[in-house]
Length: 170
Image (cartoon, rainbow, N blue to C red; front, top):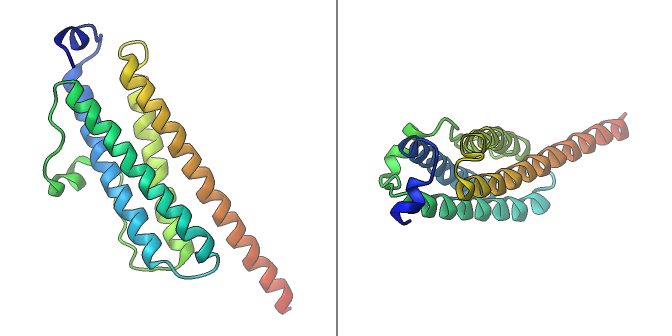
């Protein structure tokens, strides 16, 4: 990004870069959580949910690309060491030690809600002060909201399916 482009920003650019690096770390963790969880998942609706989780994983990777590009545009350095990701992230990575579909979905739902909060904070911080980052943050925020909705819908479907199965057994 040109110097003038940074100079016209009416916000604390180093703070924004820190926020974006935290988001970048969270995106990488989210990507892996979706990807590995989809690969290991077992249980009802697995064949329907797995491909969608892989789509979500690729969208998280796309978010990382956008965020890293913006950090560089702002004159910052993206987090370089994956060992730093858990330190920078406030969104936890939950290893899929229980591969049951509901457990995997609950772990991903927790991550999405954390990401929603992160991008809301970035959007609020940049509103009226950095139009480019604000637009990026709101675009990503909207995708994270869609992810949350998808996961909530799958969990509702699985729970209803389990209730119907119980009724059939009575």
